[in-house]
Image (cartoon, rainbow, N blue to C red; front, side, top):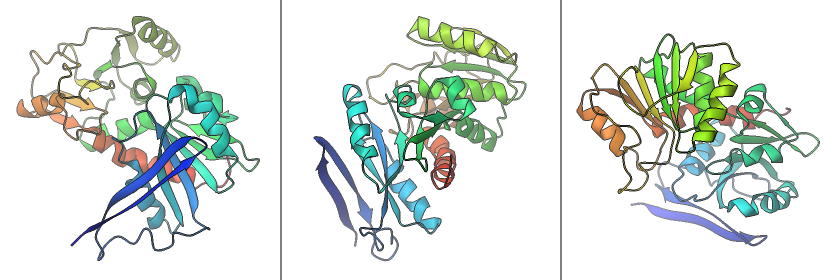
Length: 294
């Protein structure tokens, strides 16, 4: 037997909600839910695809904290107004930022980590003692950790990255910090890709350049675009000529296995999914959110 518990309410004109299946003999996350429960939001547009509310709330419980993570569906034009209202809520300790708000989240921060400042994006905001927000960006570090868990350390490798948005920018920075020998970047927005390449070249790390979304000449291929979320999406990378020694990664969490990952696995390649990345980023985000000071 299983049953569903859900929370849904209106705040400042925005719809907020949380729900998941619970088995009576297992999950106890709601046992301590009360007026003392600390609240964290994950905000995006869309939001229905995210898995973080359950996983992050579970992690809070594992750390012995009475805290929950709730989804908030907020359009880009409403983000600043929404954050203003949430900041006034004194029981809100943190914000997790997802598509398409990671760049805009920088404007919400009074301070950030050095890597967040370099990338120009944030995916996690923690309340400072003065009530303002301190931001960090964990997508890149988490993806590198997921690669390493699959035996695909980027050090000395040739990497293709498709997508120069918030997650893509963070991954680009992280693979270079991890010692990648070469990084090619491709994005539908050519100007955005070129700007990222220019910034990364200033790191004096591996060779960075614009490149085609094809398999040849690369050891690791990464999709950091939304292509693959919808069944009719074209592949973000042309897999013609893909060999079994190459590694293919994708940041998408829903579906759990995108057509890109499915085709790579069919060819015998090691893969890193959005779920693999989330397993790493969840722990990084939760550790950050549970720190007391910026």
